[in-house]
Length: 297
Length: 329
Image (tube, rainbow over all chains, first blue to last red; front, side, top):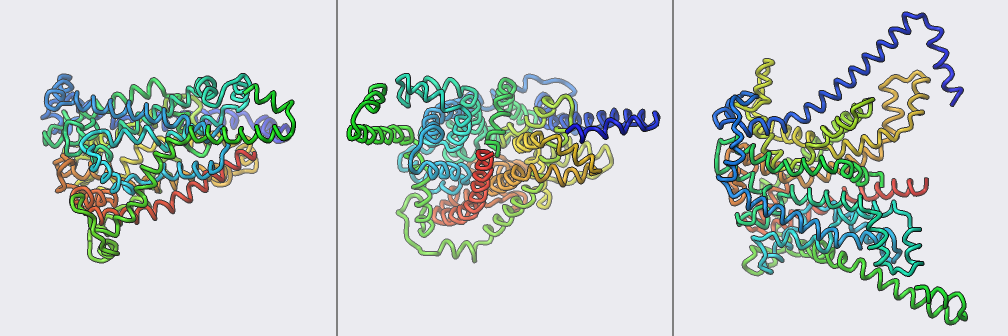
């Protein structure tokens, strides 16, 4: 290392002072250039969201003009959307779907992930491969028999077909939790078992408290996925307005008011808001969770 | 637990084998309790439907009357007489190629800019990542508005700089590129994964390359790319799988741009304009759950399964390979 670094120290000293000054200037310019590109990039990424919020507070006439900035601020648009459509009910459906599914996913996935990461059994590899395959399978592949199944059971038109599977098997949660659990040393669990815990107690008393950040990240991803889900609700509740979650409702909200872009954007802003709030509070877990889903596991 | 440990320590060999056998049985039972619900769920929600889809693909079935066996009719229809399935397959293939390319290259570009920042990394990363959290239906509506030919801010801005903006979501030739822009805007997850890989590249390698006189381009080709190639491959296959199941954005954009977004209970505007946003999964949905050609939809599903299984296999193999490398190293 020292030999490698040597030429760098000697080279500038032998240069005439003018060149050195230019080097420093180059460095500064480079810094300014990369940072302005970075800032510009961040701003561009935010622009669509900004326009959603700006359009949401415009009058309906102005939303149909090409003005960027609202002339008057109609914050009452956010109240009007609740009057024009039963948004509260849709919101409630979304909350119901997301919380129950997330709860179910954690209850079912924690033991499965524990078995995959901390126990040894025949077929373990196979089970893990099947989980990964299920995670990547397009949902449309299995949809015909599943829809048929839920029709026979009489649950189409409700959110039940969307929630129940999470209480048994959610491939993504199992996968992500396994990745997290693998980072927790086995020694702690062994120690607990020597102290007289069985596997279940070791999981509840030792692993779960230690894996809290991972469990939180998994819960957030699950919440987010179900909150954003569109295909599932369209399939099972498309004909039943009363069961619609927000994701399905906002797209049709627009249909009821053809050109009222301001109200559509107000509704769009309202569905984005919880996600943004969730992210602001739990940014670190998100980032950690994403890198875990990648090749870093 | 402690008692078995003690007994194993002092008891005779025969007794110890007996307890070991008992232990093995108990361990098996424990494992069973831990994975039984997940196994059951997998069998009900993946195993059964996968097999049943193959069965339904050989039948005519409308949910009301019993399935009627028709042999390969659905498959023959799919490959010969039915025109729109070809359009749908083309649209999805377009997305698999173009969308994958744009998503990976764009994410790599953004990630490498972020990785070069000395300060404010967290803030810029947050701003670039945040859009990927937006619900797809909402993000699509927002983009259809942003890219509205008459009053959308994008075309208004383009007019300001003297460029004619185009019809975007209302033009069959522009609708898929517009959808690609929407996806690029929301590819924050891939950016973060690539960024993490970029920051993991040992700094000494760059310094060594710089001393050898390698410029930024050569450093990128010879140092950066080789060390992040597993992550890029992950990004490529992941994007392909994403493009294969592209549904929500396509169906919402199509009907929203056509002016009537009450997607539920309305098939008139699906795929608008001129079927340019009719992706394979959208057509499968329409066939199965609007026209109730469940047998035909099942045949489409089987084909989708075969293609996506191929991609999945590549990805799973890659994931396992990198994992083994990390465990070994």
